Amino acid sequence: MQPIPPSQQQALVERLMQACGGSYTPEQRRKYFISGPQWAAAYQGQALFHAPTREPVSFEEVIRKWAEIGIGYWSTHDTDVIPTSALGTDQQWEIVARIKKALEDNGVQCSMVTTETFYHPVWAAGPAAEQPQVREYAKFRLENTIRIGHELGARYVVYWPGSLGYQVQGAIDEPQTLKWYAEAINAACEADIAIAQQKGRPTLKHCLEAKPFEPQAEILLPTSDAMLAFIDSGLLTHPEMVGLNPEYLHELMWGAAPRAALARALLRGKLWHFDVNDGYRLKHDVDIAVGLVNPLDWLNVLVLLRTYGYEGPFNLDYKPPRTTSNHGVFAVSFPSAVDRFITLWEMAGEVSADPIIQEATEALKAGGTPAPSLDADQIFAMNRDLLTLHELIAHRIFQILVGQHRGRVYSI
Ligand code: 3MF
Ligand code: MG
Ligand code: MG
Image (cartoon, rainbow, N blue to C red; front, top):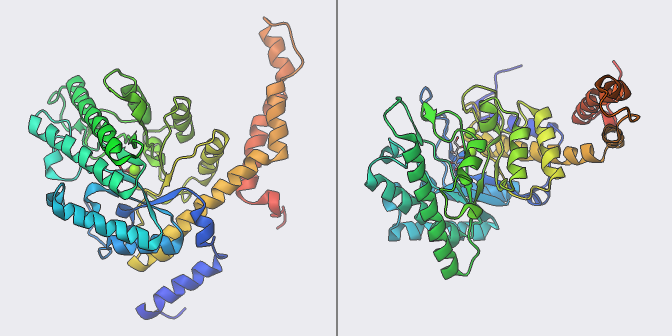
């Protein structure tokens, strides 16, 4: 192949995207509760060892592109668009008015707002640091985010307390720090109740997001399970207002089975919001787009969520790789992530409706011929061959994943 000059590269990318077999239409995509974060689209590829590879992107452009692609909802940190120094000022409300207009002009809704409590130097010792002034400032930030959320029409507020932890042991008092963190969440709930009443809106759903490592060496609430225990610890004055925003990769990072972690949140009635992405066990928070690493696991996660009636948002919290250009972020990265998600969601429906899987599942629950109730050997013998169905079900799910149930055949 001849070298391809830069002026022809975007056209090549577009042509090969088409050759991938087309895509869902924006109307079809909008039927799903998929939200696109401002920070994901605007991520420039920077990190500790990485210089940025992309140009900055404005919120107007992100919202316009969401509308074009068919992503119906937009989510944001308080500081993604508003400078930290403008928070709580008239300038903030001017920017919020511009955001509102961009959303309205493009028919996109704001689903979720979240507070940045991990990036600015003020959070060096975390949002629940020993210094009372830092904690008061954290309360202001949470309350201010809630005001912005109500103004933009959001229904969810998310807290990822990234720096709630420590680098060196013994420096902080863990129980006290958790109590202080609870005070911030309590203040946020109280503020929400007052603001919602003023505005005649329902209160927001307050969702905690856990991550097991990064940016601190040790994290006080590293997993969704830890956060469930925190919600039920007695420290919260409004535990009924607080639930979870698990992130797929954050659970995988500590070695969990994401599906089991989600199941525990579902059982507790706290699975309210879900950050969807992909990555690898026991590695960094690489935030790869959904389905590019673990499509089989993702299919199974979505079977669980469909089965148990999850109705919250699917928030595309991933980072387009540094190798993707500004053009690629909107031409490839986001549309392809949305389409893989929808495909997996529809396939999850096919798994649930599959007659082979249904019959196998019913047979497993029916069990074998009854045996004397205290005779372990007999009970096992009566069920022996039924248990093979576990592996058969897994094989059938693989077939659905690769389309074998819809025409892909055994031929070479
Ligand atoms: C970090 C994250 C965060 C949270 C966000 C929303 C930057 O790993 O996942 O994204 O999702 O702060 O609360
Ligand atoms: Mg996240
Ligand atoms: Mg992540």
